Image 1 (tube, rainbow, N blue to C red):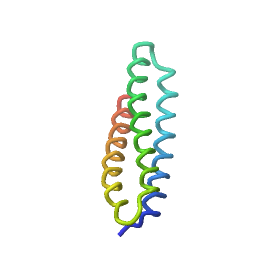
Image 2: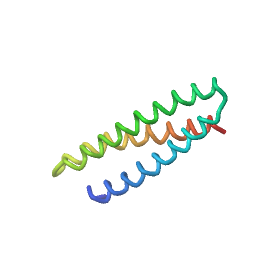
Image 3: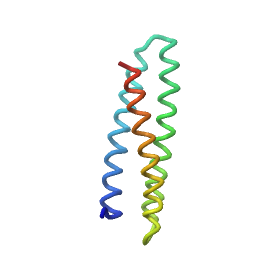
Image 4: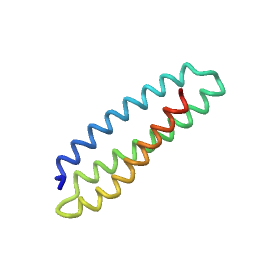
Length: 95
């Protein structure tokens, strides 16, 4: 079974990786045509919002004690999955 600390470290690393991917997408959006740039900017804004939610959940996880962290983990897993899908879908749109 995964410990709170190992889960936290794994999620911090994943959040950092996704942050870099979002930044890369933002840079690509800057080079897009004007109409596409607006569309991509909206997608990237959504990703930033999801990233912020995930970071907040990570903070909540840090302060959770005992078995309460497992409940926070379940919610965090859903947020992570949502962010992962969002990044994957947005990346596909840039190709």
